Image 1 (cartoon, rainbow, N blue to C red):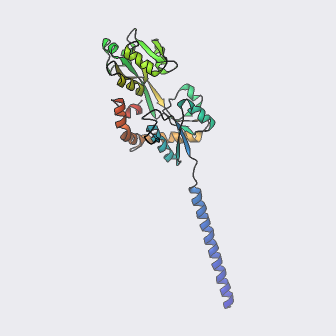
Image 2 (image 1 turned 135 degrees about the horizontal axis):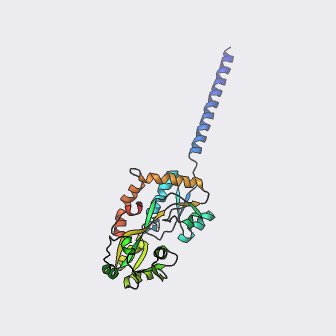
Length: 283
């Protein structure tokens, strides 16, 4: 009888150990599933445009768009790799699969929408005016003048670069546009008075003014407020939906707009001389 009892107890012990071993394996499997690394998110941007996309002194990616990319990676639980890509090659790089998403101050345009899928806008880049100072004084223009006041001036000569907004916007209003080969030549034309007005985004306009503070002024009223979005390959609905879920969180209390403003306002104020990040947030 004692022998039977001992055998019975041994069987119970074996069963108990087997059950414990089975539970341990299941927990380890569940933990493994939970911590399986997602693929690295490859974010394309052209690191030549401070303070949005640039390199720091250690040649590491830095800027407002870099911070947006890193915050997005954290939001979806993926490590981020910044892929430095010439702006003109960003969409082809999406198509070829070299990058997963573009976060690069890319304007949402009808032409680009035929090539990629865009997220909702998260910034707005304004097209403002660099104006010859003598022309401005003659026509009573100041930095606070409106686009209506600019457009009302007959005989104004605009300078622009072919196929860019500096040419297409004034042409859409029936204005005369002198063609320039590059931005430097266009700015020089305004400074020297061979042309009166150059329309560009804030950074090149302000840079042009800083290089020629005695012969130009900046007029801040925007001709166009260009929406900036994240771009993914056509049909990548999963990543697009994640981006569109991420963007509304920018406005949360302590959200990304607040974080970016705290970090970059001083830099933007130094660069623009008038506005911080709110200039790019508000349409």
